[in-house]
Length: 258
Image (tube, rainbow, N blue to C red; front, top):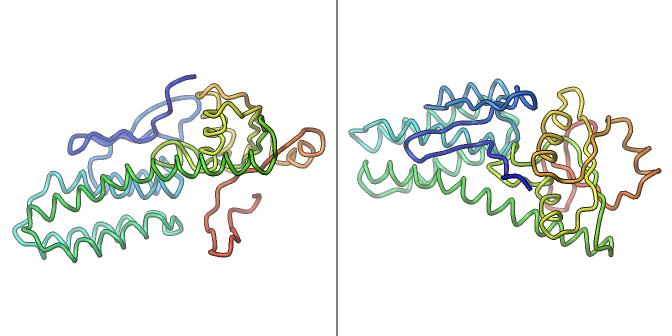
């Protein structure tokens, strides 16, 4: 199995690079992100996509900018952080993770009682912690989902269908819905993974299929309108997809086509 795909490369205070998803799967090119303007650009232009990844890249672009700036007062720091976060949210207003992260960072910044220098470092550290927490959350989602599927299917090997892209390219690493497939493979329980094209933007054909091949998972790409035929002709044990919103009662909402 090949090394896990890195969509976000971050070296604290030194560099931030994101894999240009518009060029996949033909080319693997990384775009440097040095400040919030760069962060806004790669989010707006969809060089990076997926709500978790958008939040991480947006916040890390602020961390990169903060590393190189000095502030004379804490009010100046707080004003700068708040304005830059508001700016980043407008790059993709529908990506709820970015707005949520921005609100949390603003609250954190307002509560800091340390010096301006220490406050800046604390904000940077909190942003970098978001990266670590997202990966841990993804692994937990993958493992819980994999165990639930195996328990419900009552099988040791399962065939899975997924839609759109919810893997390392849509998160800071590992993936959410695709993380479930990754966990099944880690447990030795993935018989086969099927992914759809996901028109009109082809996230499945360009990105999910790319990830499945990169990881060496047994997989097949199908066109969107083959899903029903696939289910009737092949044994599909579970369908695992992303969701733009999950309500407390378990109801979900995602793009047309899901």
